[in-house]
Length: 69
Image 1: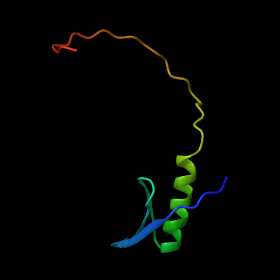
Image 2: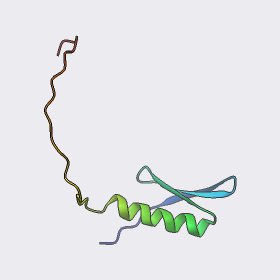
Image 3: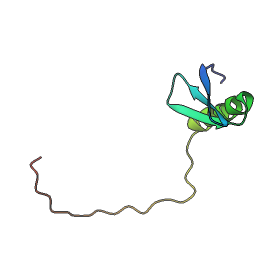
Image 4: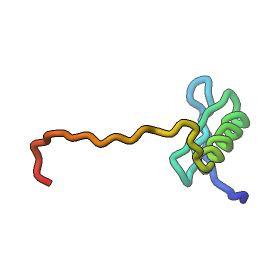
């Protein structure tokens, strides 16, 4: 599914920064076009379904805490 997002682009020193206005996603590039292309990739990765390649081990631990819950 294609969606449209707005982006703000500004220069910081030698780099251009592109920021997605709808989400806290940003990227950078040596040109405006590269910064926007990198932002597009970052947005696509942000919405990609995660797939585990290594499954974590689950442990239960006990800790003494001095706080009331």
